[in-house]
Image 1 (spheres, rainbow, N blue to C red):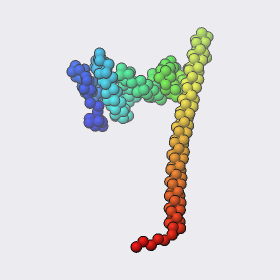
Image 2 (cartoon, helix red, strand yellow):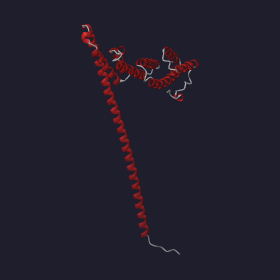
Image 3 (cartoon, rainbow, N blue to C red):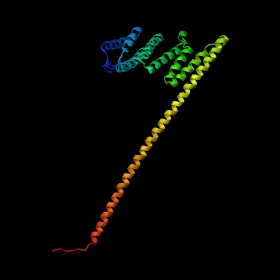
Image 4 (cartoon, helix red, strand yellow):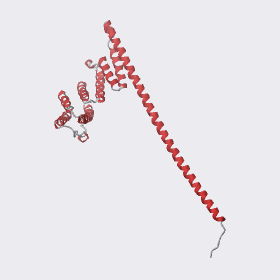
Length: 257
């Protein structure tokens, strides 16, 4: 089932007529499930704009549209064969890369790599090499996805272990040792970044709670001060009224005719 057309982002108002036509054509291609190089070329033509503000507006609308459509398409191909799934995932990886949506690009690329790894037991040609995992880990780390980068490093090491290094020549073995060290260093950096990010998050949360507590105490003290002031003022009024009453009683009664 396709998303409700009403939920789709409108074509940006600042877009030129030619770009607007290409934008509509790209949406039509995606809706028609035309996932090929021709559709990607149309996407490239949409992203050509000399006006920075217009470009940002167009890119934002494209990202929103593609995110929505990619989720729908992935649900649609759930029962398709693995080769078809990989082709579709690869298309959206390239499309998101063109649109500058790094997060979506890396997320779908990771999905594709994991899918290939799972199916490689039955289809050897799908096996993911340690170089592919390493390249992905570096890109994930550079873009702040530390946990995913660490997991990719683990997969890269596992891929190397699955190969029978003992059968390789001495120079190849030496090269693999260097690669293993590189992957381990990258993994250590990723894990350290995860810990650092966690500490920062905890510190931020602590400060947030501390500020909330300080604000609560301030409001309580302010409320208590207001209550005390009210009681004090009321007490003074009662005392003055009592003194006035006593003073009136002490005054001699004078009859006037």
